[in-house]
Image 1 (cartoon, chains in turn blue, red, orange, brown):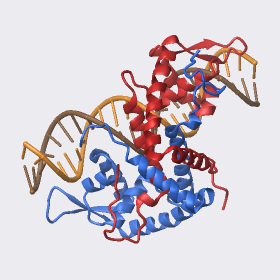
Image 2 (cartoon, protein in one colour):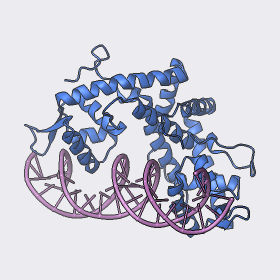
Image 3 (cartoon, helix red, strand yellow):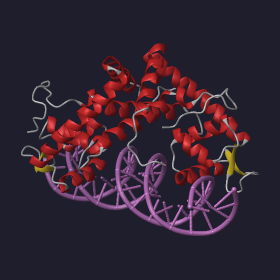
Length: 157
Length: 157
DNA sequence: TATTGTTATACTCTATAACTATA
DNA sequence: TATAGTTATAGAGTATAACAATA
């Protein structure tokens, strides 16, 4: 049998529950599910929400800049924006300074949808805060930010 | 990872980096990428690793019991095990007590592969510990376990 | 030459329904 | 009837390569 760590507990092999990656994944699934469940009526998926949010915060930005911020490939953002446009939540406008580029804007319906999601999302974050405590939540965000700083051994972009 | 640009227009909207779900997702991607990058030679994906690990810890268990522990649908485990079998890392054996059921076992190659991954994974966790501190890592695991306790479906109203 | 948006493509993960052979 | 494994299928998410228009 796989006696990999002879010394460790009766369980033998280190349990998944003691591995950061596994627990991060499980927690992320639980939190995303709670986010989706918190949406009343027309729900947005987390990815759609993040796109609307960064455009709402900084209207007129290009697809490439959204991609860079969110870590989405340019090719994959196309269909996502197509869908949000077909939902009437945002639009592509021609850039006056660079005719290759699109300026992304929320429609009025898009801004209403974004604010509605943000209201529901506040309740979602509030449930998390009740679970962790306010200080626990802040500490968690700090630890997660540190983890995001893990060096990426990936090909440069 | 996505660094949220602060202080631009529409500062009234909360930044993504203050949202637990978004930061969890980014941290999980960074940690998984580090896990994969830590594997020398023949790499296992996180999902494959988790399957080998639970079988290595408790050989002879059924596919359904692995599914229940890992939160994987029975239908989706079939192809995953097919792949691990074709890699020569594990095998299905007939159960003597229930002819519907398979007893899952690691092959010798599977045990060697698991051992190798666990060695690399220990270095991976060590990098995380250097980043967070031993106490910080323990606290993180505790918070993540709490988040996993979020009710799967929201209580009505 | 490099960049922006795009198309095409493929692989992974996940989810549901329905089938089979057993129990 | 219920359960274990399986098949088929579909929807998301993510990855790369290549192209046209533009810089």
